[in-house]
Structures are given as structure tokens and as C-alpha cells.
Length: 364
Image (cartoon, rainbow, N blue to C red):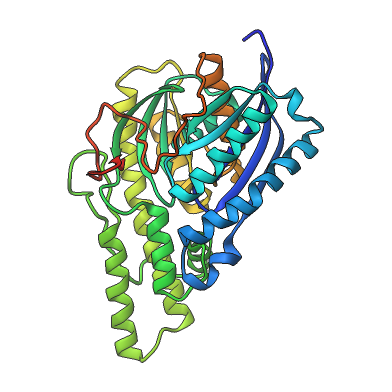
């Protein structure tokens, strides 16, 4: 690197409206400002994210988030080298709102535009926070995605496993709804599990009897539903301790599955002979303390370094988009006003789609 870059990042793929200013130079990356405006209150009564409500909220908040990020950074648009924006995958209304906002800023300020894959933002977070060297193993585990990737570069990702149905974060949210807990469900299930007995209900560990690194969480969610219904039928209700024990059992099952599949993924990655073995975890579920601890143990047993980003960078944010945009910009990547919002955008386009194809392409 020889020239410092200052990038404005914009992220709106789900229910967080985010903007950030990041500087990348020889010393590494520095987040000058990061603004995230959540929408939890807007979706609370619906038990999950409502795409139409999310899209409208993004349209109303994006310019405010950008203005605040610039204010906090102490810089104006004239100090930016480029605008990086999530162009997919995600809820199409939100992605479209972000792309159109970025296009307007780029056109008005005469700045280059860089479209970023949201998943690449998560996958490159270890380089943003710790300057991780390629290649490293990434477990991307969130509300909409779960996959093991060997990251060889900002555009070179080899998927060696992933979910064939629900993502873990989605399963956490659905279990929270089944048990009458608020949304977002991940933190609520983790909180309840802290006072629960993970051994009371022995829930299934899907696909552990099958070779490879693929995962499945749909059946686990169904097992929680059936167990809950059995308790309700027996007791005519669900007591607080019942809920806590179910949460603990569910979390333990997810943790066991992720740990074993990570052990297998690490073996495949280590077989490539990386000079400095590293496994990193990113995405919203990476904020779960129990899961982090289990993955750290697996990494230590394999002789690999374990890296998890700060909690603020686990969930959706624009700093990761700005960083991914900076790496792409250095490679000469530029987009124009034809940049399209993409609801689906696999990182590894060479591997077969895991969740099938639709009219708009492979889901993952």
C-alpha cells in the first residue's frame, strides 16, 4: 500500500441502516465513524423483520445515517475517495434503498462507486480488525447465512460447507418466537439459556452422522416445537424454568453442531498448509458467548489461532462494507450507475448452489 484511502460505506441489507467512514493506509484500517440505526421497535409486534417496513425505514434514515457518520468523522464528502455500498444479497427493498442512496452521493459528489457483497463484508472483517493474512478459514454465521469459507482474497472465496436449510440465526429467532421471547431472538435465547439446564431436554444434533461440513437447523427447530408442545400438554403451560431449560438445550445443540463441523472444516483448511493458521467467525450469531467459547476451544485443539470481531462488528454494519470496498478499490474495481441491487449473490460462484436456484439466481 502506498496511498491512504478514505471510504464512505453504506449498509442496508436487512433491518439496520448503517453508514461509516473508514481510512485504509500502510498502518492498517481505522474506523473514523460508524453509525448503525436499528429497527427493532418497528418490527417488534410482528415477530420478525417485515421487508416492506424495513425498506421504508431505510429510505427515511439513510441520508441521516450518512450525515451523522460524516459529522462524527469530521470530514466532508470532498475528503472521500469512493462510496462503497452493499449491493446484495439481502431484502431487495433495503438493498435497493442503499444502492440508490450511494448512486446519488457518488453522482452528486463526483466519487467512484463500489458495489460490495454483504457476505464479503463479514468475511473480510478479520482483516479490518486484525489485519489477518490470507488465506484464513471463516465461519460466517448469521440470521440469513451459515457457511465455511476459505478466504484467499477479497474476491476469492472457496466454500467448503454450509447450511442446507435454516441459518442458525434464523433458528434462534424462530425458537424465540416459539417460546414467547422478544425479537431479535438470539440475545433473548442466550439470556434465558444462562439460567437453564442444557441436559434436561436432549435435542437432536442434525447431520453429525453425515460426513462433511454441511449443516442443518430446521429439524432442531421442529424438535423444540414438539418438546414445547409436550410440556404444555402435560402442565397446561410453560413455566419460566421450562423455557430456560429449552433455550439451554437448543443452544447446546447448535453449539455442538457448529463445533464438530468447524473441527472438520479446520482439517480441510489445515491440509492446504497455511503459514499462519487462523479461523475467524463473523455474523450476528458470532456474538453468542457460548458459541464463541466452543469455537475457541476447537481452534486451540487444532493449533490454529481463533479470531472473533468486537461485538459491534459482528452484526450488520457499514464499517465492514467500507473496508471491503477499499480492498476492491485498490484492485481497480469500479461500478457505474448501472449497479443493480441483488437479492441473491453467492460468494463462491464456482460451487453448486446449496439452497437451489430461483428466477434471480442461486440463493447460496
